[in-house]
Length: 359
Image (tube, rainbow, N blue to C red; front, side, top):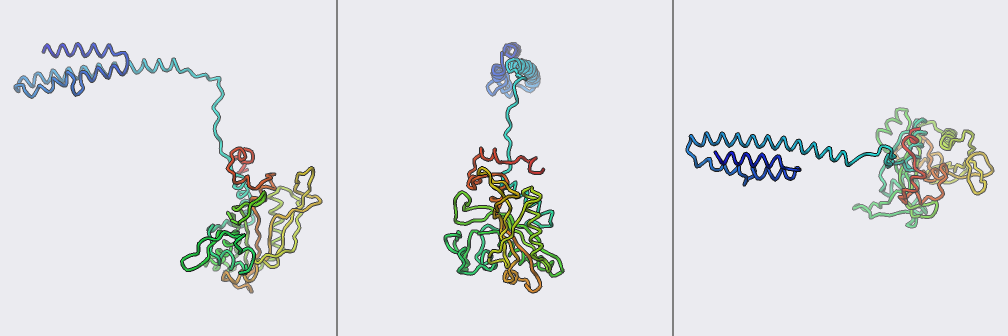
């Protein structure tokens, strides 16, 4: 019993004397740890007679509970004191400016894709996409591009290893293969047969072997396609006039349609917009100069036939333009290569906030 009194007195004194949480933990281990004084008393219970064990065990448990209560009380006191000391030492200067918050921005390519999609969406076009890696048939043959056409040559097209069946594979040189894939879709063909129409735009990445201030090996295009039984060249002209005036935000923007040649359209036309140059700066709108921005035309009957439709029944128009190019023109970006440099300084200058994007 004398041992219990001594242990109690020493343990409580050590708890009260603990100046910090580290010292308090040391006091706990000395009493209640595996080799602690109270733990040692508990180990002696097995050697006592039953009556002694019952009485002595009760006293040891009472002592243990008393020490644990003292530890908890002292821990709370020391914790509060530590918090008070920290609050006193770590004062906040509320006059300091707030820390800058990193703000992301939309890349001009993404911004222009959204703008183009919104404008054509109001005309009833839907968004379509397809694979970046295409087979030779969808990329060239279905679109009436003959085997000896310059676009098929190695200096223009990125060729990939052929499939096991020998089918040549390429990185698509335009987004037109999606037009072919869409026309070949059975649901689309059924809708057309029931008197409906097909109206899609196809934005996406394209690849050609070319690199300078206005060309890069990977760039972006958007193409449009309308197929029905009655669409004609006048509809194509009206569609593109409305788009260009809405995109460049010039209500009276003059447009010029020049006869041209593309394998997949007949007749074909390139579209110019009016502009002027002053002190080396381009201004889009009425002026004494013209700037070519896109190609267009009526879908060639061979393309319609290649895609499983009857050219005697169906006709349509198609157009295509470079997203990077129209972004450069609208937002005054001088070098196409900067689009792909991943320079945050450039993006902070030309990027768009989320609020601007939904304006």
